[in-house]
Image (cartoon, rainbow, N blue to C red; front, side, top):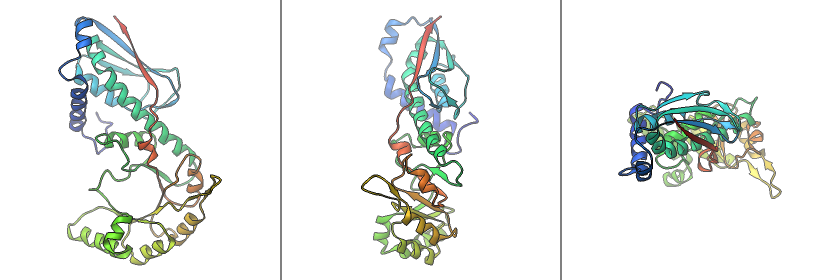
Length: 298
């Protein structure tokens, strides 16, 4: 499995699949055991029923091989590849019982990951021509974060921090607890040097005054401009505050925009000159890509 991202090991992937199968199969698939002869062989054909970006092929192979190592998959596309509705993009061959046991978990994972990859690609395409990266957030399904983020990457997006451990992200409540922007930044910088930790320090700002304070303090590696793209009552996006913030920063540190990010607004946000745009909807509001697996007994 050479195509795994650096934050997912093969061991972790197989452990996840085993746990997911235990949840679904339990003590055994009573229907399949009762109805399907154990010697019966089958072929499963994967069909895309909507346009999108495929993701989860490696996951599918892991599920099938965990259920029955005699199952073999053959793909006509690859993870991250575009697919059209009506296209057959792969087959799985092996014992019918194993294919039936694995079917639902395979489809659940592929549909979710492909939905995330497809949505991400739409955002990436919407900002084409601008030097900006579309990023995910921690708004992922519990237990699925690494796979959700993998799907974002396959869709052409960029992963933000994996969790609370690998990056400082000082947000509104941290600032309140620390007593202010400068105090929070200096505390994080001191903690990073004392540990020592290689992690970046990013801080959330909501006003131009907070942006100025971050720049004066000089401890941040990235600045988050939160909800500075305003929506008018008529539904139009106003990026004047965001544009003023990027002018203040003037390229001294990378800037990330968040809040009110949709397919309708993301290009206007990109035009302000930020280097990153983060969007929780990539993973918290997933529209699964419709994929089916049609079995033919042999």
